[in-house]
Amino acid sequence: MKLFEDPDAVDAAAVIADPQPYGVTVAVNGAGDLESVVRTASALVADEAEPASGAAGLLAKARGDYKRIVAALYGEGYYGGVVSIRVGGQEAARLAPDVELPDPVDVVLSVDPGPLFSFNSVNIINQAPETSDPFDYVEPPASRGFGAGETARSGVITRAEALALEAWRQQGFAKAVIASRDVVADHASSTVDVTITVNPGRQASFGAVSVSGTERMDPDFVQRQAGLTGEAFDPDEVERAQKRLDRLEVFRSARLEAAESIGSDGLLPYNLIVQELPGARFGVGANYSSIDGLGLEAFHLWRNLFGQAERLRLDARIASIAYPVDTAQFDYFFGGTFTKPGMFTPDTDLVAVLSAERTVYPTYTETSAEGRLGLTHFYTDEITIEGGVSLERSRFDDAFGTRDFTTAGLYGAATLDFRDDKVDATSGWYAQARVEPFYEFQFANPGGKIEVEGRTYFGFGESDPFVLAGRIKAGAVVGPALAEISPDKLFFAGGGGSVRGYGFKSIGVNDGSGVVTGGRYVLEGSLEARVKVTDTIGVVGFVDGGYVAADVFPGLEDLRIGAGAGLRYYTGLGPLRLDVAIPLNKKPGDANYAVYVGIGQAF
Image (cartoon, rainbow, N blue to C red; front, side, top):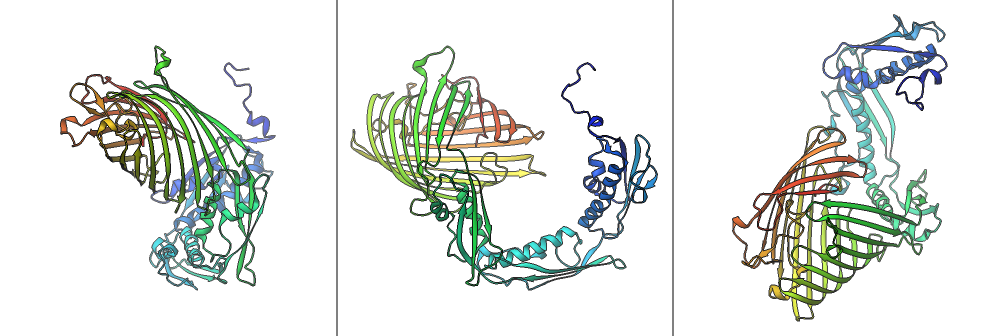
């Protein structure tokens, strides 16, 4: 046995009874990326590192490559190409499967693509009429290269067919099909004529949805959540129904299948096939900041409590764990969230929250219990609206001493999320506005709080390896004097999701004697440049800034700025984040630097 040999490694020669090693040489008589196209299409090239299963296996792979490479040439607009695959100096197509070959054998793959073809005439018979409904609009095939004079790539023809069908489907013709396709290449003129004929069929409405595969779920509820029955057919509604079912978080899979044909009544029935997830799951997490310490958290989730996808999630957290260990400085949180989907409409959830916490911030200590009851409505996949009532009982120890508060309020929020990825966005934007009118009983004061935040992302390069991300947040509180407003209703800044380089909620209003309280106004901004070095490693440079003000905005000298750099390790669940930041205009009590570790981008 060789030193350092893996005893579990698979020996290819032992698996393949008659191994036939080979080496491939590729020669393409063409410019541009044609050689790369041919290499990508070739199974011989892809499998070169492993021996073939005898001469027969090698020749089968070579004969398959003729078709694969010709199809790849069609995809680039070359319809007169000549492909030669010579195995041991002889054309593979002429060799017998039991031929004796050298060990290893040389394989030469030669391609002459011939002239580039362009479209001459392109026609779509029975093309869908134009529509004034922007939600039913489908871009014309001509906008995707299907036009006279354009390069005649086979993929363009396939895309034109898909667009032609989708245009009919968007107008309610659920079973539109391609009746015929005539593609004629004229080698004398290097042109291609294409005629596509569409059979739109009949318009349809959604018929009954039958549900199969449920175990603990109520099938009538599942059918109702799909929300399709009786409406005019619209593929967008099918997609939305699929996302609505996925949002229930109770199915391992949920698949909507249309019937083979539209009924005589004009209805198209659907079958919904589901597979349920286990009834419970749990998870743990951690984060770290050199200023705020270690945080540990865990949750337990119960799914489908009463057969209609009800969820109960319990969360627990211990944070601010630092050395030397001082349990009096620990933060504690425990809470439960109950969610009842399908309240009033399939897109409306009832959400009830109870929580209690004790948190030691740099500027105050909070001990509180809170309850919230509200509704969340998913207006579209990108737009969410929520609102409800809240009640909080709290005690705060801060610059104003020990104070108790009892606060009742309303809350409402609208979120617009047009990012391409919620965990690691490379394009799109996000905006949220939140308003909370409240009444505090201990001091008998009404008040209100409003916050708005926006984020935007710009990706550059193929697959967006470079991303420029920006964030801005503003907020205001109206009401009584600062001494009669609970600190959790006021604004602070600082921390991993705010102004990095400063402690969490350490930036507030300085009364001139070194005492820091919360402010009525906040303005924050962040700018990040993200670069993906490899598929799994990325680097980030960033600068954050923030104001917190009492009654008027302070001068420029009071703007707190942090800057730094970070590393990202990209996983299937999102990037692992390590950021190091320094405060650029540190005040007494601020650390010289801060390190942040967590999951997901900073914003």
